[in-house]
Length: 64
Image 1 (cartoon, one colour):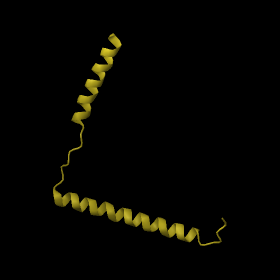
Image 2: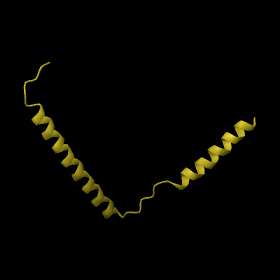
Image 3: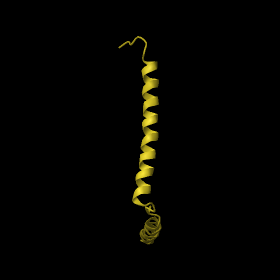
Image 4: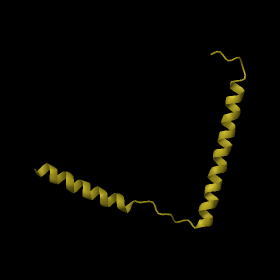
């Protein structure tokens, strides 16, 4: 049963490493809100561009 023990030890070691790697929020509330708004603006711009592209490419005859 040495193999099971090795697996358990490896799992424990991995769990300790993963616990140390948890993301920590180092931004204040206003910094976080500003970052969130900037990211949302970027996504809105991408969505608008995608919608315009889809609208212009689907302007022709549609066959079903």
